[in-house]
Length: 272
Ligand SMILES: O=C(O)CCC(=O)C(=O)O
Figure (cartoon, protein in one colour):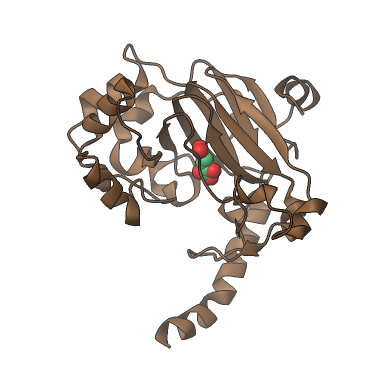
């Protein structure tokens, strides 16, 4: 499946199939995004970033950055630009939590609208984020985003490859529950490497992966509940936001209600 096919076949927000389209005007500022980040937020420590969806620098990654003598975002960006070090994928830089000034310069394409949750107070749902990744880095395990949100991805620099499975293929993906409310079965044990190990994961034979490559100046609208993971084919700078509107609000509320119903069991587990 190539991006040309995706572009021509689907045209509405309520669509159920991924769509790739041109988008080269998301970031509107005289400085490229990376330069802006360096000049406006460069002095912040890397482990202070992170929002509703994840921590930019997590767990073992803290040690990875320490070993590289990288503490601030400016240090990371300089090393990223120079290509002198092998850097971990810097994921989930939260726009709403730590860099709200970016919002004035971000203009979403019409395909990402209406988005009823694109407000800093609703970051739990929309969580716009920046990702910086060297060639060869990738997201890791396949997953669905929480609460049946659609996801809008925009590639600002470089190329990123997405590998996708349809929602109904989830039954073959060795799912496990997410750790955060609403604790959906939205994580998979499968990674791009494990995909090839059909002896260990025989059910995968029944699922059909779809590959989509985003080039700089392109966007991907990924409908709710599609399984996905990524690999950066070149050094890559990208943006993503989650979307809720009339097409998925019912499902999003339902997913939250299911989470609430599971709350007593979770509390009992936590109390031992
Ligand atoms: O941009 C990426 O590398 C993947 C991001 C992603 O899968 C997510 O935020 O759900």
